[in-house]
Every structure is written in C-alpha cells, then in structure tokens.
Image (cartoon, rainbow, N blue to C red; front, side, top):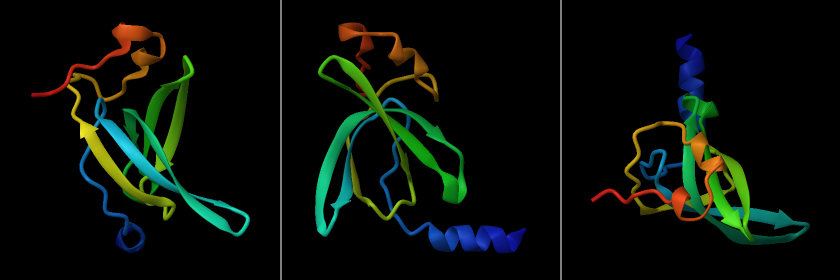
Length: 113
C-alpha cells in the first residue's frame, strides 16, 4: 500500500495555491489544436473539491451568456498552467450544488474579510 502512495506523490508535481469551495479562481489552461498551442483562462466559482491524492479534481462554475457552465479540472493535469485565487468566499458548505438553481444576485457569494 505504501508503494501506491509513493507513486501518487511522485505524480503530484503541479503546485497550486490553496483554495476551497466558494472561492473565485482563474484557471489558466493549455489547449493544443493541431500543432498550435494557446492558453485559455477559465474564471468562475469553485463549487466542489473532489477526492484525494493523484485523482483530486475541482469543479469551477461560471455563467456565460446566461447559461451556467461547469468544468472539472484534475489537479495534477499537466495542461493547467496556473491557478489564481481572485477572491475568497464566505460559505459554510463544501459542495455548493445549490448555486445551480440560483440566478442573478441570489447566486452571489459573500466575500470573506
């Protein structure tokens, strides 16, 4: 069992800042299209952190053209260039699924001071 944990720690080389559910983040994600490569910024609210170790993921939700869009990012993905924490949210839950039903000002998250 220790050997599995050792291999997972070796794979986990992507250093990200600490963030939690409710924080607004900007994820700089590398996209390759054929031979071209570019960096795309995906900005939104973290609604969940999932799993531990090498399989850890986080889900970011944003509203684009009045349509909610969620994207799941693996923490150890080599395609993630960097993650910037724009603001800290004051929430009392670890999974913010209730944001899916809210729209407009009700979907706002208070900023932690």
